[in-house]
Image (cartoon, rainbow, N blue to C red; front, side, top):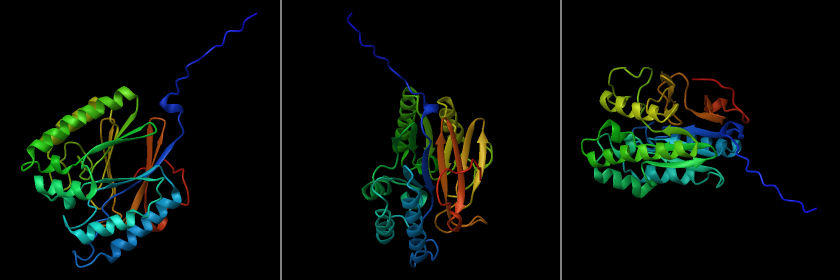
Amino acid sequence: MRRLASFFLVVVPVFAQAPLFWVHASDPQFGMFTNNKDFRQETANWEFVVANVNRLRPAFLVVTGDLTNQEGNADQIAEYQRISKKLDPAIKLHSVPGNHDVANDPTPETLAAYRKAYGPDYYSFREGSLYGIVLDSSLFKAPAKVTAEAAKQELWLEVELKKAQVAGAIPVVFQHISFFLEKADEPDQYFNIPMETRRRVLALLKRYGVHYVFAGHYHRNSFGKDGELEMVTSGPAGKSLGPEGSGIRLGELKGTVVNHAYYSLGAIPNEYPIPPVKP
């Protein structure tokens, strides 16, 4: 009797995949401690962060902006890049632009300078079931001199959200300036995105099932929700303005849920996994 071979297609759902670990750092901001006189403290902090990331061995390190304190400062840029190159090649680095990197009022020239130094200011990446979307929040905050670039980013964003949806991936957004610190309807201020743009972009993100946005800029921790969307504002790897001190955030995608916790530099745990603790 002839035996017939049987073939089965097994689809592994997102929730069956192993947890994905990453590190979120923000605002190393070389030069902030001394108002650009030097960056010795930032060097010490960032060396420590990179060493700990290498020890923890996450899938990637994402740095949500203000890589340097002075936009276009060649020495500050070089120091951030010098230390970042010590990252284990197996750990991907995703740098994100902040207002100190592209200027508070970005221009075509400041965007071009950033892209020359670091690469794209907005882009996507895939890591396991996570679909990372990096945004240039300065194009939301102050688009007056770069209106075409701002419009281009929003069109691109919807295309990427559709791609994530089709792929069945979990979209997670990383940017510098938070849409809001605590409440989606809070008044406009320096540390959030203006209301008109905020409402429009949040509606787009929620339409495509985005539940997590990670940012920095505030130099302190803050947490808020808009429906099912969590807005996580993380303290700095550089100079802190809050009681939590300088630190990093550890993230874990487990199924469709993101767990995360902030640790000061002196309290970084020995290993993953992390507890599902909020800020």
